[in-house]
Length: 291
Image 1: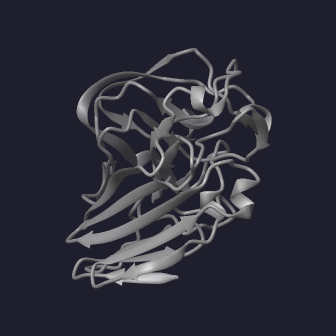
Image 2 (image 1 turned 45 degrees about the horizontal axis):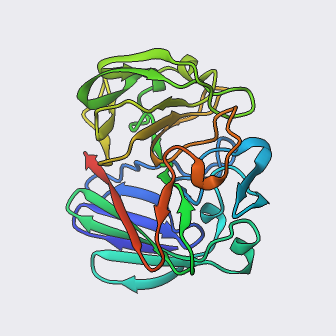
């Protein structure tokens, strides 16, 4: 576990998955990130790569072959090595290897960096195509934000605040975790009140948001956390179906799970990223703490 700290925040990052495990405000010790309690969920903020969500039957096709790959891919359970540590930045890397090539037929280098700037944590993703052919992938974030942030509050005191007025419909998930082609009107305005009933059918997924910032806020406190993710066409929101978990996941995605009727190859998926030989793909998200 590696630690990074400035005058405002302290964060902890695990080499397993290069996963952000803790965000603490130094002014009063408030923790903003779920603690990976396996009673609810064994992660805090995994990165999703090279797929997001599930592929049909746990299998997908690429380069004319079939591969098995579990939900959200392998990056979240892979060990990254530390490549740079400075006063305000931690950087980690993962390279394709025998284990990744067995489930994903492309060579790559994936770097994740964390930079502290005041009350903001900037997270940078960089994927380099080290193969001799085009590579295809999706990438996304899955941070579990404490909800409520203050221990004196309840989940129902909280709401999601969007930085633009929305009129958006969710994409329902089928029982097998794949996307359907239905739409259910869900969001009208800039706020969505939270309650566990919203998630009785699993994650809320949007593909038509105008917002690029979403905050977890409370009706009873001024503490909040904002996720900023520009140019991410898909957003997921999740807490366990059974209800009662003390967190809400805010998930900006570049890509998504298979649709129920999808039968093509990985390269044919909606939202897939194509990267030419030797090229680099870069994007970033931010966590902004409003303490």
